[in-house]
Length: 407
Image 1 (cartoon, helix red, strand yellow):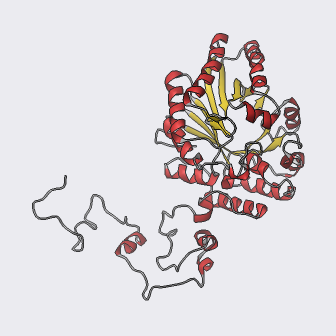
Image 2 (cartoon, rainbow, N blue to C red; image 1 turned 135 degrees about the vertical axis):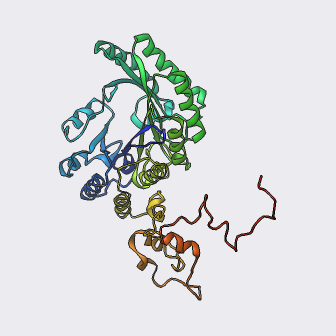
Image 3 (cartoon, rainbow, N blue to C red; image 1 turned 30 degrees about the horizontal axis):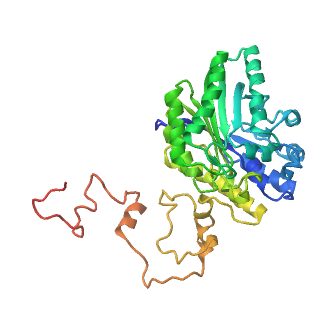
């Protein structure tokens, strides 16, 4: 995503079809999932995960992934991805490449070997029926294969980075120690570490910890310029932590983010179910645009996808922009000054569906609302002239006593 503000290059992956739906009803019709996937493809999103090639015993919501692959309509220019946790899953996913792009296989991610493990042994045992020790036991083979293939760069990473619902908090020092041990193994192999990822399946992320971890990584290992963050939202910190990640890095860095429309998502093995959530894609896009980062995403179409998703689920999702609308920044988007009381979520959809959404609501004013500020913005003028005379020199604006000065 383009920007001119000194922020990192942001590569965002939409995970609603995978991390989002894996915690929802396993009986959602395939045709509805295909329709949602096709709609997401039309939003301008460049990277979309279509689902997981995993055992239906562990994740029954993904049992129809093959049918989805046969029915959906890939859009040129969109990278479609899928999760595969073992060799069998990778083999299944390769049957659909293309349109799938296989970025992870046998310890390699995007053509780069990577060491990775979960900091919570309990969680990984629950999630994949493997232990942390088994994860780490695969490291020597990954390193050996990397040396054999002549790899010049490698990655490191941890999941459950910030803490665990089963064993408690993980300090920044604990995280850095795990990363140090991985980094040392690559150093010993003579392969430069240029990528790091931090994951958060149980919603323990916090913006201060994100700043501290990324800050220490940049200070300690200046060769690392590729950062990945997978943040869940169980305690409402995912959007703030995403902002912290963006502002902790600079224009020499790449930041890979994973989000879900509606903020749905979560692993059924983390203990918080649908309450786990993720950073909502539409809220993150709205934030990025406000930061001057061009996303190339049509937010209006993305909100349509959220509403489609809510129809599928039969409930409201966790995002905010899909309910209140994007910030109205142009005169043609401003709410009517004489809109009646707007009280319900449905009435609030007037931002997209029009004033008929609040027809019949209470109108308490005896006269229409007028304002000289409203007159100005409707003419395309700013409400305040910071370096001009309005409203500071108008008769109604209180003036300091003659001769006094501001501090």
